[in-house]
Image (tube, rainbow, N blue to C red; front, side, top):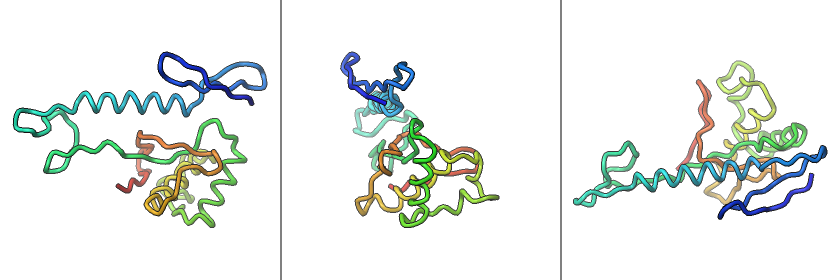
Length: 161
């Protein structure tokens, strides 16, 4: 697949040309746009009252009123083929040191039982465990960072501040 960067207003858009000639915006760019919209909404909500305190707008903060919006999770890129995800998943759960117990059968993150879902859990486990030691959410281009919590049902994706 060939990719190119094009400008749409002020935002770069990566367009991937598929083998059949059709074009598709990259999920990473879509995720980036959602992240930008999400951050713009938080910025809009950051109002300070006359006392210098953050107003009661449903935004979480600490007792000093400091607000943090930098939560990130590492998930599998939807455009990466399953065989590449499986190799990265095997590394993450093996040599990488991710905690993959929750994606085993009869555990809370086993379902949906797909390579993509299991890889997302393993990638995030590795990323959260080692990000403060310099680890990245890369996995040979199989992963991407999101500000949207990928937890679902009883499956909770860890977040380490």
